[in-house]
Amino acid sequence: MADVDQPVAQEYALDRDCTTLSRHVLQQLQSFSTEAQDLSALMSRIALAAKLISRRLSRAGLVEGALGFTGNVNVQGESVKKMDIYANDVFISVFKQSGLVCRLASEEMEKPYYIPENCPIGRYTLLYDPIDGSSNVDINLNVGAIFSIRKQEGDDIDGDARDLLQNGHKQIAAGYVLYGPSTMLVYSIGTGVHSFTLDPSLGEFILSNENIKVPDHGPVYSVNEGNFWQWDESIRNYIRYVHRHEGYTARYSGALVGDFHRILSQGGVFLYPGTLKKPEGKLRLLYESAPLAFLIEQAGGRASTGTQNLLDAVPEALHARTPLFIGSKEDVALVESFIQERARESEKTVMARS
Ligand code: AHG
Ligand code: MN
Ligand code: MN
Image (cartoon, rainbow, N blue to C red; front, side, top):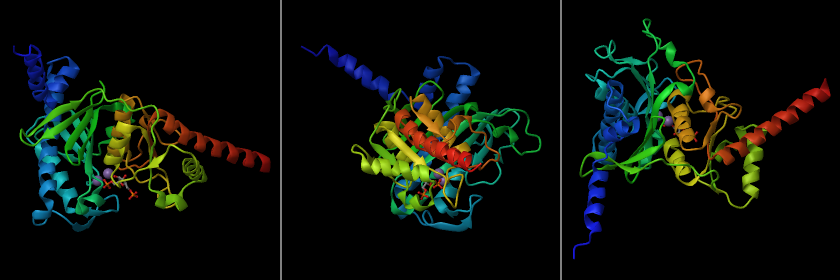
């Protein structure tokens, strides 16, 4: 007697294998409108970029000129890796002749890149970090990419993309690619957080997890403790607290995407506080922190600059940085409580002196 459930299980497996990223976007939007089709096509292009970069990363040690430094320093004042430039250019190329994206703002480019043939029609702007965790590239450890999609406001006649200098609530989609043992693409268009895994045999990103929710609390705290000497006393007090209480574990990979993905999956908090050398912190608001803040809020978590909701932060410039505390709502709140406590103590000291 054939197992009556057999066809159902098989049908489910087939349906799951056919749930590509572009189909999922349309399902999420419950629409086949032009706008829905555009967003679906846009996400497909991002998936193509991820596949091209994943292919190069997986063979980088065998490809002449794939690894190492270019010898140049970017607008961030950081030494640029060859993979940074390759990945940056891949994102530009996949959007050419697309009619979708007029402007691309990248960590690796001082000014936004305009695609003239798209600009009259394309009303979307892609903001991205083409390779996040560059320091891991040459040692074959996980790296990522982070992206954010905004709608262009106005005609940007003088090409200074001033309309991008708005808070993170203006994002219409955000996500990241994690180049790990498998290549995963995690995204949200405001209807939950969903993950796709690249099936190399198909060359497709296939749905692997829907409506991901971050635990309200988790054991992981993720921070570069080598900066302890540069932190404000409030952050040092938080670190002393987790050092003295059971139930915490430190994990830090040097790549924000990998550390964030762990916290999204297991709970906890990632911290990149301001330092003496970088009082605003290291991470860039528009294409690192804000997209991840969009995701974490969709997943039931929180993101903060330490003094305000990260999504409320308004950048003064394209490459503006802010401190970042992101993850489980209880763990972000705990970090903020140390910051608030320190602020109260400072206020009392000032009052006492006056
Ligand atoms: P990028 O490689 O895009 O410059 O990003 C690196 C960032 C982030 O991925 C990571 O969390 C952080 O830099 C690590 O900084 P430190 O080495 O100062 O800890
Ligand atoms: Mn980065
Ligand atoms: Mn980068």
